[in-house]
Amino acid sequence: VEAKTIGWAASGRNGGFCAASLTHGLPNGLDRWPDEIGALEALGRRNLDDIEATVARYGIDCTFERTGEIDIATQPHQVEELAELHETARAHGFDDYELLDEAALRAEVDSPTFLAGLQDTRGVALLHPARLAWGLRRACLDLGVRVHEHTPGLALARDG
Image (cartoon, rainbow, N blue to C red):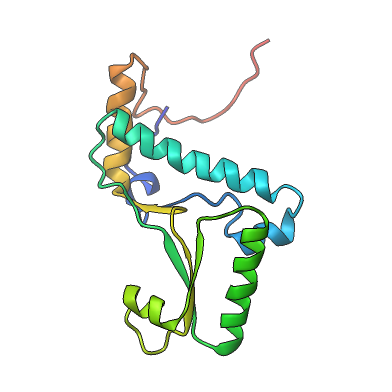
């Protein structure tokens, strides 16, 4: 059910960042759900893996690229914070995080103000959101799913 057409609004116009984090970043997840963080991170990673697999399975041309992301330190105290976060990530078994010293970071992003970085090598992808939405629509239709565009959902009613 879609009020306009698939991909018409924000789902087709967002920035194209597709992140595995279900907790809006590892530090937030550690602060809020320390006992569940392992399961939450695993679910998020599996979710992103499944999106990538779906794109490949159905030949969706959305320029999906697993890029990762780098948190940057520009002040000495931030370097220490990133090092601590890296150790915490490792202690929880998250091995997709790599601590980059200044030289390694400059090989990735050449800025004289960047002192260090914490790279999540697999947790973020870039894609074209409208193309993803259109490709998913096509895949659903090919599988026999009924798609109802121009059908705003105005209310929910319990049946039974």
